[in-house]
Image 1: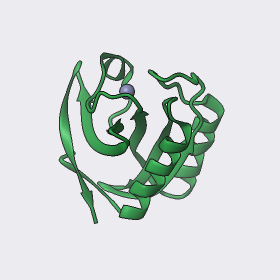
Image 2: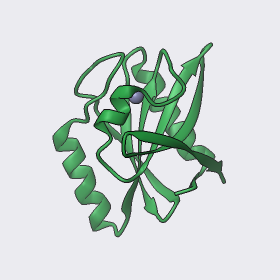
Image 3: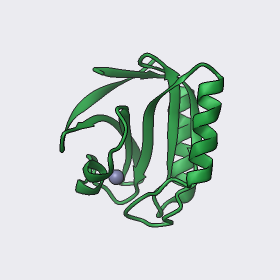
Image 4: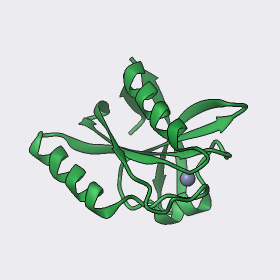
Length: 132
Ligand SMILES: [Zn+2]
C-alpha cells in the first residue's frame, strides 16, 4: 500500500487517545476499505509501558469481530512513541504480525507527528498519510 487516507477528525481522535495515555504508549486499530480509513478503534495497551504496547486480547478480538460484521477490513494499526523515535523500532519490526499500515504517532517538543509504515520481511518503508 502506497498511501493511507484518513480524515483530520480521525487523526485528531488518534492524537487525543495517545496524548491522554502519555507517557505510556497507547494503541488502536484502523478499520476501513482499501486505503481509506472509516473507523478509529482505541484499544487498551495491556503492557502499560512507556516503550512498548501489547493490545488487550479481548478488546482486539471484539474489534476484529466488529470490523468483520461491518463489512470492513483491518487496514492499519496505530501506536504512540511518547519519547520517540519518529520511526519504527526494532520491537515494532519484530512484532509486526499483520499486512497493514503501521501508524506511529511520535511526540517531539510536545507535538504529535504521525507517520505511516509498511513492515515486511524484517524491513520497512514509509507509507504516505493523506489527510483528506
Ligand atoms: Zn513502536
